[in-house]
Image 1 (tube, rainbow, N blue to C red):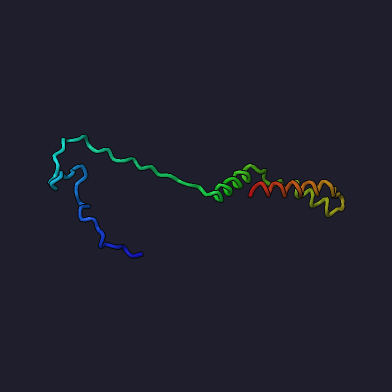
Image 2: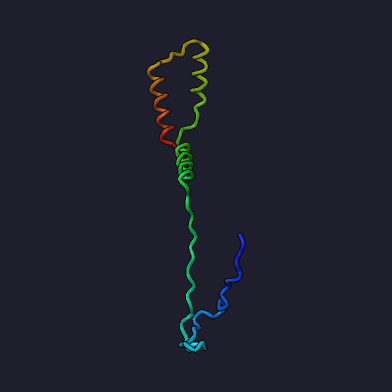
Length: 105
């Protein structure tokens, strides 16, 4: 993008607080209190996607860790043929899992 320098304000270097009178001469002003600088504050905006990621991370941190003893017991039961699958309970758990995933997005 090009900068148009032909339209530069030639009075840009005029001191602030030193106005001009009607004849173009510096106006007389009474001394004023020191100028207070404007306080600038920083701000941060988090996008909706970042908020979702943050929510997912929080939910994951609250989830229990894997119980390796239980996993090993289930593997042994499957290998020995003792593990029975309840289709209704499985369907309920899958539906619940799907709803949990839907809530995360």
